[in-house]
Image (cartoon, rainbow, N blue to C red; front, side):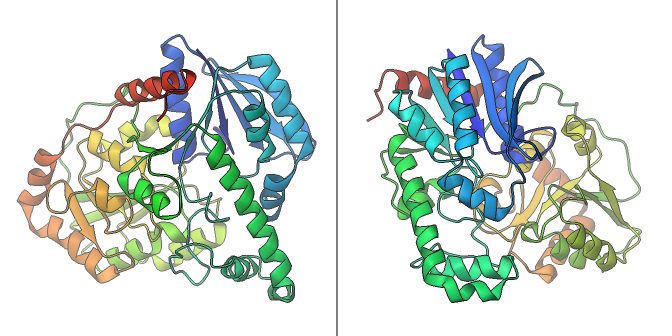
Length: 416
């Protein structure tokens, strides 16, 4: 089968859950003798497209200027250069199925063109971009948003993020642009044969927002465990907690540091893994906030080292303030038999079973999080008990079986 993945950005320049998942699934499908190619946008000062190979996968990189929030918005509405290059890729690859992973910064015309050619398409929801222009339904005032209200709240959110309050004078016009964006994205949701939600939470959320129930299917992500180390661990003089992921406000790392600051440094250590260059101001604030000497910043890491890192972790912390849609790192922690402390909302409340394989705490509550940390420190049997309850995780092989079945169904046009 000839399969084309479309994603807004890709490895190694951008590393996140969407990019890691996309590559893992593509690699697994390629191992099954499918012909898989990936089309994505990349920042660059000169408009061009290059074709390269990464681990045997053919990658089409389209450079079309900087992907700022403004250019991403207007590229959705129109970008003739990216659209023309995508047409070239369709001619080169002649895909039988297109799997849309993320379209931020890519023109909606890509989907419309493929639809006119009769190519069946599947879409995976990795965040809330089809509802929210910033994709995470969280406002600059740090509140979770329920979605557009005549798009005027979207205008307020955008002007705050851009630090451009003068744009409020044009609120009706900007709201119209957001409404038109929404119309285009709704057309995409109507065109694709099937929409995949990685958690039941996401499926229910988008059904409430108007996606027909019959069209959106819950298929849990799988993870690649090919290089998973065994569960043997060296004895340590204290517990090792860790945060692994992006260093941005909505991830709640500052809440974790505030909670850990009052932990006895002789009883536990906290390792923070994440790229400090992505949001340097926030990263600097985290370092200033961390006065406990047992908080260690480990910086960016290659995802290939994940299992090595998890082999030295006793408990993973996921203190997210936004509604995570899946959070692959939770599944990866469970694969390495590492319990998780997570925020009690969004997909995290679905992934982690409180008191069974981890602990759930109210989001944004450093006191509750500190109590959860102390529970592991004070109750020596807690770690062993929760580890014993961790169930086998969904492998990428099992996930790819379901995705293959979906592709075959859309090829036969047998989606109900």
